[in-house]
Amino acid sequence: MEIVLTSDLSELGRLAEAVADFGRRHALPEPAMAHMALALDELVTNSIVYGYRGGAGTVRVRLDLAGEWLDAEVVDEAPPFDPFTAPPPDLEASLEERQIGGLGVHLVRTLLDRVDYVRDGAHNRVQLSKRVARPGPSA
Image (cartoon, rainbow, N blue to C red; front, side, top):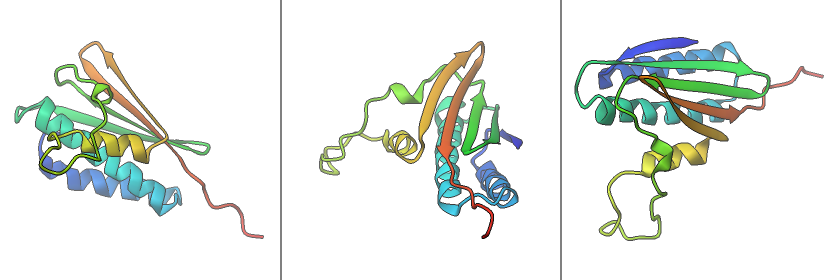
C-alpha cells in the first residue's frame, strides 16, 4: 500500500484509515497495527509540523508485508532531519524539568522492532519494521 499525503494535519485521518484497511485486508493482529499506526501518525505529524513548517509539500507512506514483518517507509522532501539522533527523553524528571519534545520518537522506538533513517538526495526516508504474528490455519 502506498499513500501520498499533503503537508496538512487533516490528512492524518486518511492515513489512519489506510493503515487500518491494510491491516484488515491482511488479517494482521490489532495490537501490531495499532503500534504501526501510532508510529506513522507521529512521524508524519513531525514531518508536517517541523519539516515543512506550514509550507506545501508531500509525505509518502508505504506499507508492505514480508513474511512476519510489517514494513513501512515515510518519505518527505523537508530539510534533512534524522529523528533517531535525538537523545532519549528523561522519563524520570518531573514534568516541570522535562524538555519539550522527544516523547513521540521515543514512543516510535519503543513500539517498533526496527527503525532507521537515511537521507537520499532531497528526501528523508524513515524505515520502520514491526514483527507480526499472523493467525495460523485452524486445526
